[in-house]
Length: 406
Image (cartoon, rainbow, N blue to C red; front, top):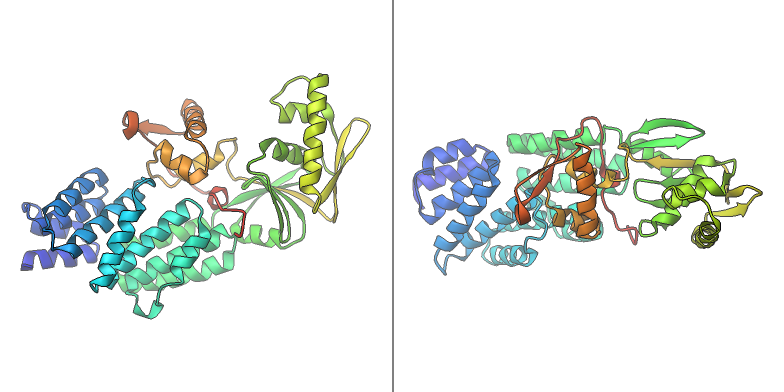
């Protein structure tokens, strides 16, 4: 490897893409193409970066397994940064194994962290923790240690563990100082801002106030009956009833909680649950069926009593009923939560991350676009959706987490 390639590689490792391009910008050999691709990725031109990395992978010979694998890892990082979550993960794992077998442990570790990043984007926290547990922290470079602590903080935020997230981010900040890579330091700073921004709204007794993540953690430990509109669940302590796949039931329990300690009329429940339809006899029958289903679902936490005019929520422990609402209003807040990172997403990637159908996501995007909240670029399969970051709000409570085992 010649001196210019070596110098360009060191510049990239130090977070200096322009310095790397000064050395290899006019070269078309395989190592130079790979370095140019990584430099373009660091500068934000992800489309050009992917083209260069694919050219580099094709230019390396059949025996140059390690350079080819590094190109695959770099392309995977670009794919996940551009929210191409359907990028073949098997190729990344094969590249990581090839790097491990040939002693390139630093790039193999980076490949593992890319797998973790994808797991966090689609809410697979247990899988992310399993991969994290395989690392020997004593062998990590400062840059990899920063990425490790950011991953730990990301998991803690999703699990509503503010103190653990704070500790992990403090470790990431210290490691980033040793790494001296501006992009890593900026990522740590952005994570701190998310931790210190309002993550939800607390609605109780007709009053609404914003909550930080640590406030949400305290609320979860308070023993109150919480109607969690961020993750569409009802929870009290360790007991959680997931209603994300039963939207009518969640709409009913939220309406009951908003009226608590008073009851709510049948007409109002029909209007909320059945999209404003008038309460004729068929809707009253359907309402009774849905209320019966809700009684069964909420049996560990609360009961529902019929009154003369409607229904009343009766918690098993009636100390307090609280609605935990997203910091963003609107029924498409979960889609906005992903777009709030400022990256461009395809509708298929959003559907994968949300665990929803692509058609449902497309309808939400169309509604948000009509309201001027999102915009799209490209056409056909290349279309991507994006919006500027939403300042002052953290949306980690809106991002998906499996309610089973998490």
